[in-house]
Image (cartoon, rainbow, N blue to C red):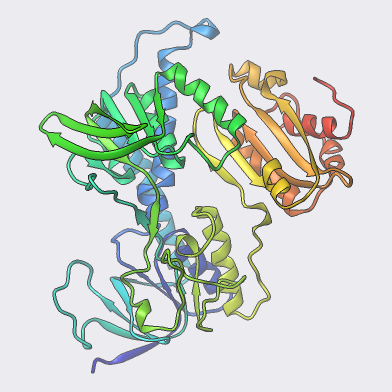
Length: 474
């Protein structure tokens, strides 16, 4: 039997949940060990997800701005792009810089980082083994650790669908972020957050993009009037959106990939340089030895947890994409701090009343709290107030007048229960509205908050003015 090392707080995974929980646990006086199977820190979000995708989206916006500024009276020569330099900037100036920052923070907080795969042996022991395929594994393989407390933060991976194995010109979102060239024709299967964002990015970079979505609308987690604003912009960019489309198979050759899909039972083919599949993600809970513990999971492979992130085993916590709720990095950040605090004996708890969700489409969408339909489903009587960006001087001066801010509030007390933003700066504006929802603010609280002029934040106050019955600019 291999020697056993005893550790205090052990964390599996160094993604958004893992590294944040490590830092908070260390700040609370715990001795912390992080186990990460990748050779870089930061997880999917930082390395091949939300951060590099925003870099690519920004590059697309810059290219479009350079290509067409005629509305401002600016005439330029047609710009060109060296995509290898774009990819180099994304990787080295953005991703590498941020991952190096995570490494520095963990070192600063004296967190012990072990590279390898963690495999649970029991409710209090695990082994750290080398990464990669293994034909056999004995009880003596790897480093055996006996932990006092464990936080599981193993994240998720893309779902692969029949007929679309991730290889060659059929890619997942990671492949979509690391293409060697800008495709002339690009097919995206799945019109959720990831598919919509990268479809917009490549359209801005010059690709002709087709989105195949199985349901009746892209971005089903957002209100239809918000999605309509995005669809309007997609049409301007030449993006084709096919709804009710069921992807059936793919066939590759040296020059591209042919995608076969069905609409109303009729098969159709589309040829592209690449096909990216973004139809969801699967929790990474199937290869970590949970069956050797008493940790309970759902039929979807998610780990059941209480309001502190504690599993059915009292000394094991789980956070991030592997627990129920939206798979969002900022949700994992919050859960990480809650779990670390709970281990320290603090009365922390997760409260998901106001978790903002953002899609970096063109224009951006953001929502927090309840929608009008959510409130109706819960039997809550609400009213709404909506102010268009077309009435905002800053949005008009940016030539981005499409979209609106909407408040959802109780009909009698006028307490803010939710809010939605579609338009310029939505990803930043939702923070103030999240504060209003989480703080249980009244619409009058917002109306009496002076917002600077001219800024994109003013429509929030304008919507509140509408809610209290004294609209100004509408």
